[in-house]
Every structure is written in C-alpha cells, then in structure tokens.
Amino acid sequence: AKIKEVEFVKSSARARDCPVDDRPEFAILGRSNVGKSSLINSLVRRKEIALTSKKPGKTQLINHFLVNKSWYLVDLPGYGFAKAPEAAKMDWSSFTKGYFLNRNTLVAVLLLIDASVPPQKIDLDCANWLGRNNIPITFVFTKCDKMKVTKGKRPDENIRDFQEIIRENYKQHPPWIMTSSVTGLGRDELLLHISQLRNY
Ligand code: GTP
Ligand code: MG
Image (spheres, protein in one colour):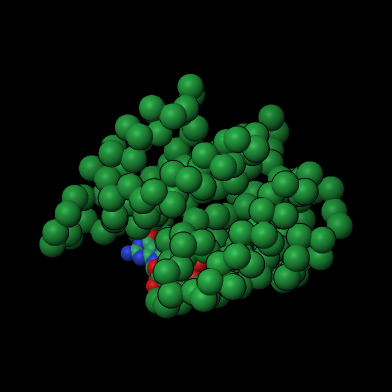
C-alpha cells in the first residue's frame, strides 16, 4: 500500500467533464471544513497538492488525483456550508449527485465525519442517500487528534454516538477508520483498506 507518485490530473465542473478512464477511484466526501483536502495531502504525503483552508468552501470542483498511475483519489466540494447562497447549495447537490450516480469506476466513497463535534443530521442524511443508491461507503472520522475539548464530548465519545445511530439504520455497519491529518493516525490503515477494496 505504498504511494510512489501522485499526479494532479484535472478539475471538473461537471460529472461529464471528469477524466475518461477505467481506472478505479475513491471519492472523498464530507461537510465543508471536515478535512477532505487535508486527508488527501496526508495520504499522499504532499503538503498542498490539494488546497486547504481554514474557511469552509475552499474546494469548488471535482479534482482528480492519480496515484501510482493506477487509481484515483477524488477531492470534492463539501456540503452543508451554512453561509453558501441557496443557489450554490442547489448546485452542489445536482452536480455531485450527478457524479455519484454516473461514475462507473467509483469503488467507494470515503465519507468523512468530524470526530470533534456531535453527530450531525446532514452527515446521516448523506450516508442514507448513498446507501439508498447502493454506493459503498467507508466512514473516515477526522480530527481525532482534537482531544482538548472545552465543552462537549471527546472524539471517541462522538464517534460512539455516531455509530450507535448508524447501527439503528444499517443491517451491517460500514467499515470505519479513525484518522488525523495532523498526527498521521489511521493513514496506513486507510491505505491498506483502499488497496483491499481495489483488489476485491
Ligand atoms: P472544503 O474544501 O471547504 O469543503 O474543506 P475540506 O473538507 O477540504 O477541509 P480542509 O482540508 O481544507 O481543512 C479545513 C480545516 O481543518 C483546516 O484549517 C485544516 O487545517 C483543519 N484540519 C483538517 N484536518 C485536520 C485534522 O486531522 N486535525 C485538526 N486538528 N485539524 C484539521
Ligand atoms: Mg477541500
């Protein structure tokens, strides 16, 4: 599960503009600011191949990164950005839904969940929508390094609460991995998971 090279291939504004290719791909999805672009950088050990920001709404297009010339990581715009204008929100759902429903080479969605906050309805809605459309998901909990909480619960407690809700909704709990782009927690586990899904 070693990453030898990574190459930014293309930014696409619509699903039909994505690279025409039969190599398998893994989409990184989650709320704005959950750490999607940071996770990609951490996985491929490149500081800013995917652009990150403290402000939500940084990634606006579908970005394809080719790893070891054999599979893609796909960085997507986040959902649930409260300050986004209504028009942009509508646009998000139509364009990303188009991607999920039409991308035949999509192996699985890595659905990122912020472990530093309690379970969010929008994340559960998203997981349910993917489930209804038979798109395999892996829950990737982010920001697990944030152990200093002043109010609310610790990441491990938030994760437990989230999983409890998921268990009520799924016959089988999807795979899940705890990560941190700051400490590198979960990086090797996630790369191994991806390679197992690719060879499945
Ligand atoms: P959009 O592109 O706006 O949807 O955001 P994104 O999901 O790509 O988030 P991004 O990677 O840009 O990170 C958002 C913020 O969270 C940045 O300030 C990151 O430094 C921070 N962040 C990301 N991952 C982690 C993590 O594992 N731990 C901590 N403590 N902070 C993180
Ligand atoms: Mg981003």
